Length: 302
Image (tube, rainbow, N blue to C red; front, side, top):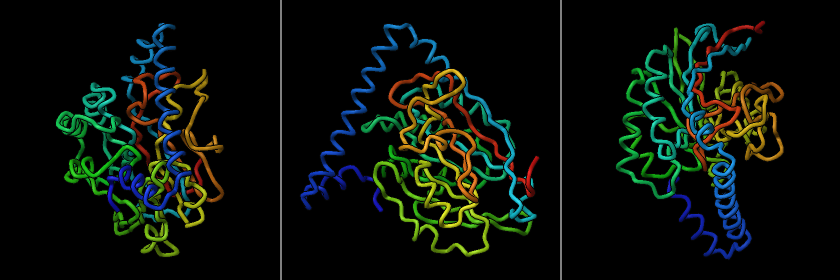
């Protein structure tokens, strides 16, 4: 499926006279434009912009264990470097900050939740340089990604030597004579380009499945299809949160429990990262940026 989806969606809606879909897209676009300008005005006149921006550069490593009794023996202590929502062109220094943060980490595989750019019409030459800087210290490991709602054909082409994109596809991860299944889907938030039947086509019933999605809002379907662990981003953890890290907005509908960090849905465990970068405004409050080092453990945990 083409990643140049915005134009395709508008043209399809026009051809089939889907005026309701067009209206929703139009309203959604201008809602975020209004929100951007309102947030900028409030931040400037309340003197919060500088503090909020300083918070965006406090990138840290969130290290934690996830326990699964059904995990294959060979994957006990398997380490995943997981990150998402870079939006490099919204905050230029975050690229080099990312490279510094991950250079000393040890891991077995790299997984990314997408959203590499922020602008709809970015300076692609500058963006390519930011990609080179941001991912310059990644170790020579398997690297997989899914597309986010900000990603297009140009972004995928620029990153094809750095990541293998799993948009409605799966692959086997092998380690210590064992394997698990990694399933990825195309953006399910804005473009609704996910195809779970296609993504899970090769999955066998008894396989341990890590499900990679840009957004957490498809959690219910992921669990029904048999995912053991869902990794996602998109929400930025709220980005601007109340004291105690309580998100004001999550942009995932009514299921607030999936907006940030660890959660569970029936038999499936999930994790939604705060992300590396920022959207709309380069500010953060009570929601620090992060890269995640997840260690899979066989067992029931503490």
